[in-house]
Length: 95
Image (cartoon, rainbow, N blue to C red; front, top):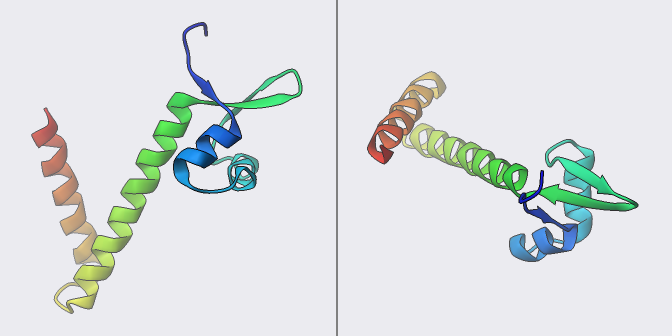
């Protein structure tokens, strides 16, 4: 555990331009993992990074699906297939 980075709710809130209360609510919903240090709550840097990556991917999927459906050329299932193909090609390009 030594060497791991932990953040306060205020540090995360400042970075994301939200209030610390928003961060605490996210923790209550289980969106962010916490660790208690005495009476204080800390957030694991890896957990925060994972949350941001997953949130970003959900946003990309939602936006992409909406755009494809708005274009009227693809239904929801087709849009999902296209988004999956984009993600796979993106993953392959990263290696």
